[in-house]
Image 1: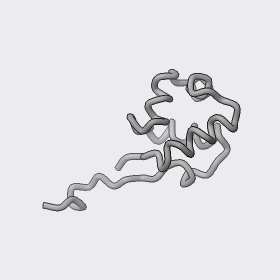
Image 2: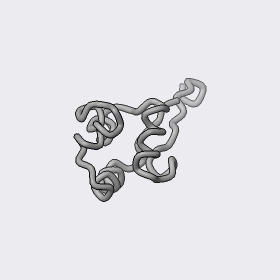
Image 3: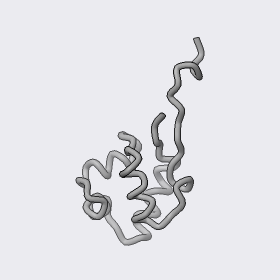
Length: 78
């Protein structure tokens, strides 16, 4: 299973309306600006702790930003 950003444009808007640049958002999370940028643009998926920190920092509901994608091989077509 992996945590996936639901809508990158919506996440960017939320970050901006909370007064952050991507770089300052990364610092506030305790990560680097490039890592935060990769998460925001769905290049990388956050781990559970970072995802929870993002939700807490932005003051939004988890489901507003993320969804959990099943990676079970049994769910894949043969």
